Image: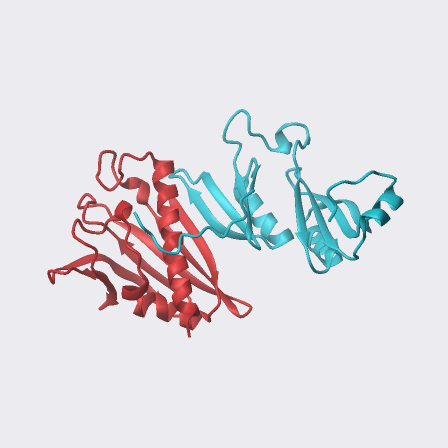
Length: 154
Length: 156
């Protein structure tokens, strides 16, 4: 078994639009957080390209956050997720789903395996599992609010 | 740490309801009432650590029997010490039928009340009692007092 953090939000947009904004405009809506730092540097620009989710830093270096594991527009997207402060062998997984509900879309994120971040890791900030996963849920809720606000712009 | 868009949409009073099987509850509450799962946190054993279901701009938290002081009615002889009231603005009768189809026991069928609401009461598969109401007519304080014989304060 693995831990799961699931959050969902209704967005006033089609699944096509929500999927496109999520993937093509992630550089615009992504909200970095000091709690879940992808790299120790200042936040860079995120992008999905060539089967990867990358972050390009100000110094031009490219950090690979993850690989795209499933790309099924406009319904589903799965990618692996690792932060620079993770142990080398630790990979977690993020699944994003876009489900039409009437004229809206229910966008959900499920982040699996984050509890594997070892005790003492900088990525854990000393939090026990429950608190860590609760903060992770809040982090993804903020991301969903941001992608939703952008998807609703026309 | 500044994170934009953090304004909390949730109404500031929330119920947290305990279940022996909270994952089953998430399913039957969606089937019966149309609550939508907005957050679920599971530990590495698959246990529900926390969950929230959204209904309008309110949430109900659906949890496990996480301490000796938190029990489902199913574990304490069916007793409720608190019930949740759902206020809707459309077809309460259809709402009741949906709950019945989801295997909720209808304790009191939809009926008009002296204060202007039409309400029904039901019991979910673990014994939690829910009341559902729709306002169907405007009633003044005087009319309500006359109809009920009660002295009413705080009625706008």
